Image (cartoon, rainbow, N blue to C red):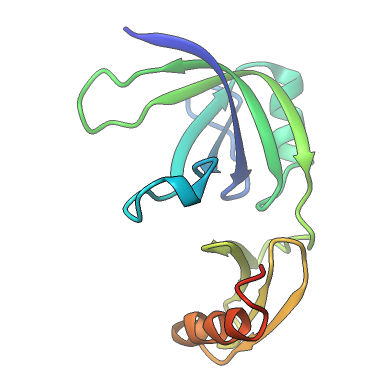
Length: 160
């Protein structure tokens, strides 16, 4: 089994949950460091993380929410079979930045490229923000998010 000690910076994708084999499991969305120097076919990567440390598990299950930026340090375990995801076993966790908006349990905070959107099951409209919390607007439906972002970028010179 191939392993490597590393640190990964990424956004929490969903509310961390108790794992089947470890006290806490969560996914980090990791973006390439310099998007300008990589090809257009390079996308965000999902890194599945877990921790057996009770202090880290407690922090994950009580204080971490989607959209928080974390640095997870630990051992990256390569998958046993092709096509399976690698797993980062976290032994240190640092909160680099917190989500700008608290996430209610019946709403979903998600990333749409560089933007942040909030999906609410009770509404068709979707609030859209920049990663810095600047209001972009309210998309009428999920399908019109891209149009709203395109208008915002044209009006602001692609300044997210």
